Length: 283
Image 1 (tube, helix red, strand yellow):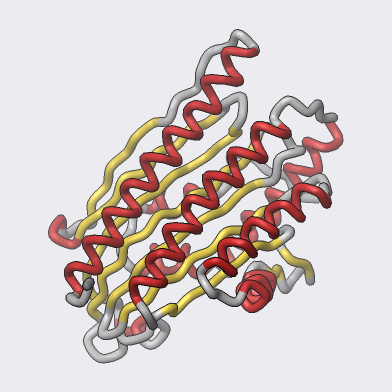
Image 2 (spheres, rainbow, N blue to C red; image 1 turned 120 degrees about the horizontal axis):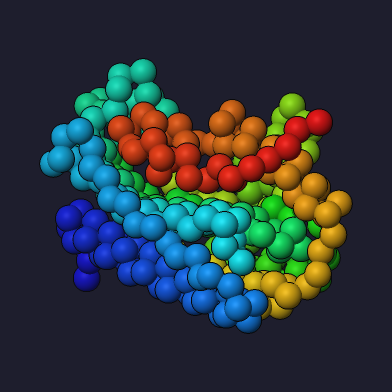
């Protein structure tokens, strides 16, 4: 049985590191495949490692690819950090109000596609320990060109993962819709997905759910990209994509809790802001 806090941390971190390697391989293979089909130069991921100012408090590794045949920009970040939250931030984190100590490990992926027919994809899962411990994360998609079939398939896959792990899909879906809501535009960021946090009961079952969601993300991206990558698109659709990216930036800067957590835990600025698209438009 997995009982000790240190063993749980080790299991969680090892999974996130492994999942990062699998997503990296799959995404790089996509670029190789489609670049070769066009007889073009293959864009490759660039690796960067970072550490907190106190090296004993950990750091992370992230990979970024830009200007590819599949991805305009995609980042795959894995980090494991610890430390003490600033006093003004402690009350916002369960179990951190007394001494502010924390440990956190997770993976975050944001993919902005070259083809506007493929939605931008966001995925992250994490395990956090203070005086309490819990899993959180989710996945959502942000299309700029409506495609009911693809949207349905994404939600069907996420529902299947939730059902097989006895999780409440409708609750997670509603949570996602509420979380990724741009109040100043009075609209959701995209088609949603699932979002969850503070899963702190039955550790092993929650760990399995987090693993299944990671594998599900690989399946969803594989299906989406292979199905839609070669579909032709128009200049007007690219403009719609850039306008949608403008709202994506607004959400991440104004509302995203992950961005705020990273900034308040001494994370690497470039890794935190890797979710921002390479270009965008506003009107």
